[in-house]
Figure 1 (cartoon, rainbow, N blue to C red):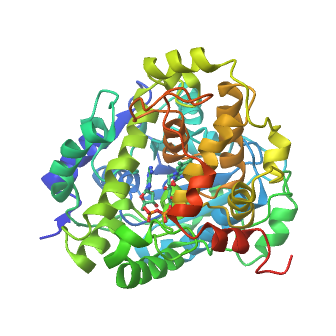
Figure 2 (cartoon, protein in one colour):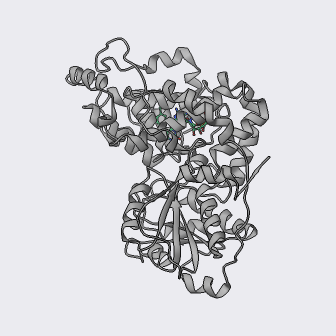
Figure 3 (cartoon, rainbow, N blue to C red):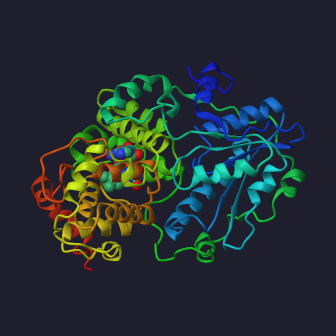
Length: 474
Ligand SMILES: Cc1cc2nc3c(=O)[nH]c(=O)nc-3n(C[C@H](O)[C@H](O)[C@H](O)COP(=O)(O)OP(=O)(O)OC[C@H]3O[C@@H](n4cnc5c(N)ncnc54)[C@H](O)[C@@H]3O)c2cc1C
């Protein structure tokens, strides 16, 4: 039986997911509840929007949804801008049918007006926003809440099982798995989203903001006018909820039954869900993906997929919430530090600069193929992503350089970059969530992965042909 917005289930979930970011009360003279959409770019299964709507209904006020995009985020580029904007166009078209007013403000140049959210907040009773530890969002929220004179609440919608249930840093997937899986069925219960009861009057709407993006314009032309890096082109993956749902249905029907085997073959692009960009930007919720998978093949047959989607993805969130400096070597366990110290001076097979790596100019065609896939599509197949990350560890002058290079390449080129799973995946390459293995030069006791061995495990030549341009005739 689905739960209503006013049910005990929703109240309990919100109690776990919402946190006050400042100590101010709500304002009685507020004209609306502001939902500042930052990381959860959807109107469905959005816990922050649920809280904003519930609070608005309690106060008899309407909800205003604001989303903005600045040229100042790290690696701001056409790829990220385009993915966000095409989804925003869908949101703008859908919001009214759900009873909401939604606006998008594109700040094209660094010296354009930067205080839009502050102005909107100044007329709100309270502000609800997304709680997200990466992509600069936690920092931006903290700075905003410190200067805002009314209640600011951040709500976590990233995880299926509320992250607040796991207060300590988890040691490994095996420590989180039984706990998170025990909560899964309860957390997956569907909710019927009631619309907001009060509508935003036209006079209020037109008084709010004059610089709203008009989605009938050519988005590529808008992006071209932005003061961002135009050398990273849009990825071919279509953005938006409709595209995500189409892909999800196809995956559940065709590949999910054989996920255990197909996900291990990098030349088989359809063997895994390819949901990570949609999940990163919150265009779909992980709960919807999990329900679709269980609905298609049953919980038992979906278990391997759920292990990635729930255990590993929520372990990544736990890392970024509970471990200081999650993007540096400091997040690694003591045994890794000891082995890195012991092997810091070992001779490297090759040492590449960040620029050489970025241009896929290494001696190894298989690594170059992975980097080319990343540049062309904005993703790397999971199996190749492990080889890609592990190789850079051995091809950099220091371990710290290697981690810095990987974060730079991933955050700049990957559509799913700047995500908790980005940092967890890269940290895993350095031994995080793993155990010591046999000692080797440079690797020390960190698990090694040799590109040469990859040829025995999967059809690496097919993958190379695909991404080094031979099939494309480059
Ligand atoms: C060096 C390195 C960097 C990585 N960077 C990212 C990144 O920037 N963004 C990102 O989302 N994932 C990252 N991963 C994890 C993983 O490679 C991707 O999530 C996965 O390949 C995405 O493809 P998919 O959607 O087809 O996954 P599927 O196999 O279909 O899995 C479904 C979902 O589960 C989650 N998931 C799967 N594997 C993992 C994992 N190992 N850790 C955490 N979550 C997982 C993702 O959300 C994924 O979309 C990285 C892994 C490594 C080794």
